[in-house]
Amino acid sequence: MSITEEEVMIDGAVRIGATVAYGSKEGKSPAIVIVMGTGTLDRDGNGKGFNLNIYRDLAKSFADWGFVSLRYDKRGTHKSEGDFKTAGLSDLVDDAISVVRYAKSLPFVDADKVIVCGHSEGAMVSTLLTGKEDVAGLILLGGAGTCLRDAQRYQYREIEELSKRKKGPMGFILRKTATYEKSEAKGDELYRKAETVSSDSMRYKGISMSAKWLREHNSYTSEDFRDMIEAFGRPVLAVTGTADLNVSFRQLDTLNGIPRVECYAPENVNHILREVDDDNDILKIKKQYARLSKDPIHQGTLDRMREWLRQFGGN
Image 1 (spheres, rainbow, N blue to C red):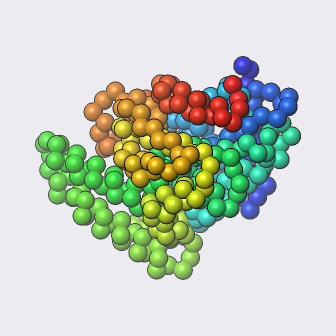
Image 2 (image 1 turned 30 degrees about the horizontal axis):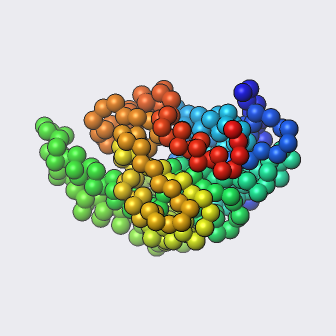
């Protein structure tokens, strides 16, 4: 199928730069809004010296399957307006809702069949928006039922376990500096500072960041996200690969048994939905991502999403 892409600006609390991809404007098609993860990568999943193309690739697959897909730049980055360094989690939710409402307004979209696909932090944003906006279903990639603090704690444990296996000077340094307790203490210090400042932004160890974002994330537990998914009551597909070093695939166990929730843990698949080809070292994860981003998204994951999406139409 020939896919057309159009760049648009979406009005909301701030103006959001987005791309709409579709195969046809005839009739009304279901739609999928892609909500990206943390950081300042663009709507395709690319940044300075770091090109993943994960959101571009997902958007193309969704459009190939007969869905209108929308992906967008986060507030205060690239072609979206606003201030990234003062934006809170609630602002990211509101921006995602603006894109969902824009999707519903398109004359070639079935407003009753708009699905939200959130990746990483986007899975948290997508879950939160269900309390404020009516959507037909959720795809939660690498973050279902997980709060930010627990995701970070999982990473602390992964680094500590790596330190036990690492040999030579690097192993020695890690064992001295990167224990779980020390990492957790540093995390606690960061969140405590965010709670004490009155402004929406702050500086921490020379880095400017959003205190509002930290405070709002810290107000949610993984149990809260699990309860929101259950309260949603509509179809949810939760996917986390067994080689994901950002969040634990075992978190999917907390969602098992919730009506209308399907969980899938693809074997040896990492956070960017690629099959790993190395020893999966968390300290070398950026190099792994850069290398594997040239590979297609894991076919088994694509197949599972496509099969799940058939309930909404498409092809």
